[in-house]
Image 1 (tube, rainbow, N blue to C red):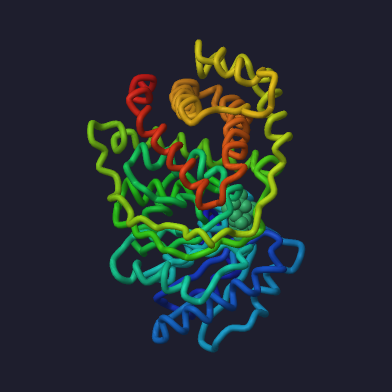
Image 2 (tube, rainbow, N blue to C red):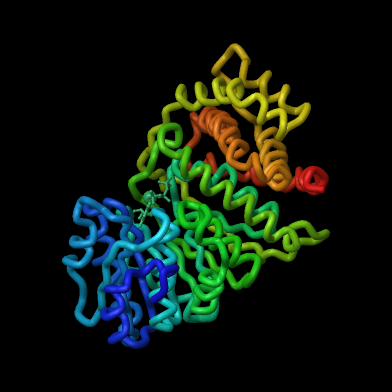
Length: 410
Ligand SMILES: Nc1nc2c(ncn2[C@@H]2O[C@H](COP(=O)(O)OP(=O)(O)OP(=O)(O)O)[C@@H](O)[C@H]2O)c(=O)[nH]1
Ligand SMILES: [Mg+2]
């Protein structure tokens, strides 16, 4: 293997004797010793139960954990006949490099399907393997997860990835950065051939890269109803800044790359996905959110980044400044319409101002925090199911403002 590969050379002697396989199940990890054993066992049991005569290889691509994650993975219980490989990937540290390593192994083993499952998952069940791999064996190229999540979990998904993907490409993929998915052999090769692995795709940009590429270059996409996603969820106020930057810069890079797909009179995109609905009694465990911290980030960030805001928003910067300096915290934040226009202005500015891209993404973080604050306030008395209506409202705002995007993009 050459220098550019994410799989270290010492792993090769474990791969070549296997020859070919049907299914590779990969788990990226970074200090997940407390959960990865369960994920590996359930995935192996599910693979045996649902695909008893298929060759299955489990791969753990680790980011250099110091808590014994790889050892737990290799020592986890599994039915006989399932190969396991664990190693620290090479390359830029990040989840995307881990996935690249998993894809490289799937390609080497000529696997018909590759399933990836996050190693911090507590709610995985054996049938997830069937739900993610089954449609691939039946001819789909990409299976995207659909889960029930608490209203404060998945704020990057709800406020930007889902609405923007839906408005741009017409694809109602509810969890475009879900983390658990299935990919065909064909799409694995497509991913590996792209010249993106030195960008934020090597980090948390990888999920939106995979989904957008699947939409733009295949369209044979299914959604798998997996039930609850219970994982080590993060407080959106405290921990999501770097992830937001990596995801959104990739989202904008993908808009530039796929302009020919979305900036047409009638974007073809993927077909509408079958509607999946939460039930009223499906309320997941709460994910805490530090609302005062979100509001403070919004207020301070708008002041701190005033020059970049003027660059991106032009005259509309004063509207945002007025909202951010309002006296009361009770209804502070950005409405769905304001947020959609902000994202479109920033996307267009990101395209035009190559030298300013890092500053633009940095300045967008406090505005995003303002949007999340507004979401949290509006959803205060709502169940997670009811809060879905707010996500729907956000999607409609992105769809209705799409002519504005075409305008500012010129
Ligand atoms: N190998 C590797 N894996 C990583 C790295 N960062 C995250 N991961 C793994 O990628 C998976 C998803 O990361 P999480 O931090 O759980 O992110 P998430 O669940 O998508 O995001 P939230 O919804 O914001 O919690 C987990 O299995 C992590 O262990 C990394 O730098 N290297
Ligand atoms: Mg997680």
